[in-house]
Amino acid sequence: MIRSRPLPAGAVPRILSVVTMPVWIPVVVLAVILAPPAEGEMLLVPLTEEGSRSLVAALGDRSTRLIAAGPIPGSLVLRGPRGSIWDRVGGKGVLVLGVPDMGCSA
Image 1 (cartoon, rainbow, N blue to C red):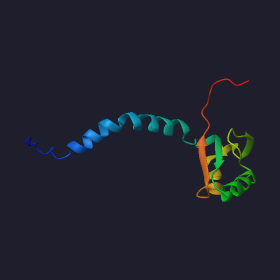
Image 2: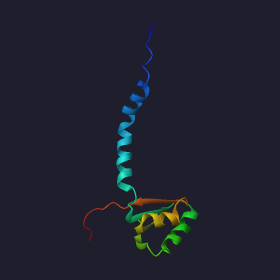
Image 3: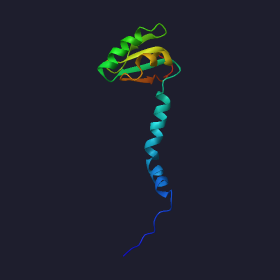
Image 4: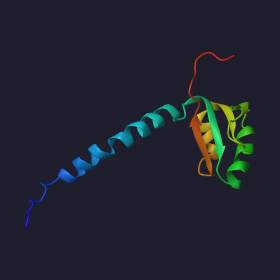
């Protein structure tokens, strides 16, 4: 019969963190890249019917400007201050993402 010694305290979380690091690194990088800026272009993606209605409310704010329809059906790209946009759509079934700057556009 093989007897194994118990792992020292804290060893299991350390092992799990090393194993899950390949998953967490891309998640953190994406979160940083797609975090909405304090002011600028943001992609608003409705996740619910209430979210779709709140997008219309976000368009009624004078500090925001519609840039284009988003790449996802029902989504919009708006430019404005994050606080103002969040006040209109926050907690109402809308995913707010930053639009990464891809350099020059045609």
